[in-house]
Length: 427
Image (tube, rainbow, N blue to C red):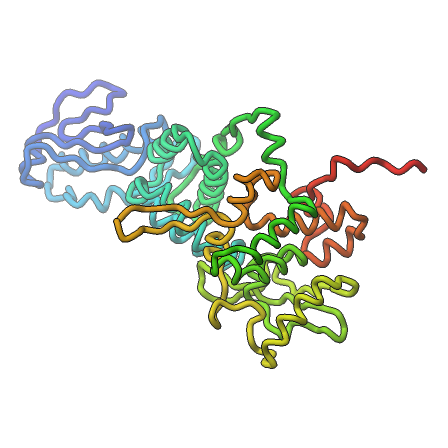
């Protein structure tokens, strides 16, 4: 069909087709006459979807030789300009290891959406985690790369971009773990990936070291008994209506240590005054706008026998209703949610009539600024505070862990704020 050009042994250059690279990826490059004859352009290229490695180069050279043989065949007409017949072949290396076909790699977006759907379907993550962390936070970080083929080059770009970020390092480290898990999942399901590109970085990525002073400050997880009562009283005595309205809820959170979503979903039928139990069986999720099972998916019985302050609080609230299906704590008949708690606890952002944005500090922010409490802790510190106060005052850790829906080890590791004034008993 065409006359052959001289070709040195071992070279990848042939008469009308050769193997080249573009940004680290292999591609076929056709001569001007083949490009014009079959593709109507001066220079035609075809990406092979494989990185430039010795094994992939050997495979690509085999494809190029097959194409050249068809171009040069004396009968003519064997060359397939669509290249389908060549890209589907599976040549064998000398080691008799079959290489994958040269189909394009899947994009990161395609794999990511399938992967996180699989994580949710197999119940490895909760629906709220799927929506807030995977679909929102992680996906936002990966957005610049979602349309790119998920290969070595894209993985390197992701790593370089994330490593350059100065903030959110804890989040980045967990994302590297998720991307490594994604790679292994894609490999196991034969989705075109043959390597875990994030195995090394997930281990080697280092979080910044903190000064001893900063570490001690961050280790401060809970308020003292005195600080707890200062905060509760400040909510009740606030001159702001939206802060007073949540005072009962704030006190309940401090007195039970329950997760906030569990308090939002609590109904009067879950309060058993006669037997002395509170039943936590549901949790309200703000992100999902619906109730779901508790975090541990276990219906938990909280023993309130002897907790007179808690019992009196609930009895006072119960006097306002006889309907056991009503929410114990409601925002005008609707569920409370975390944003409303944050507004009263931390700050309230508003845009005034003059168009300027203002931030009004909440109860706990004001107390911290005034020096009336040790410092500002997030609303979830109500749980840490309850656990710490109970444990440091001799409560049985087994009962405490069961009441809070955690193991004893988890309480000690993640929630307990040790009382630095306590000493060992002289026995």
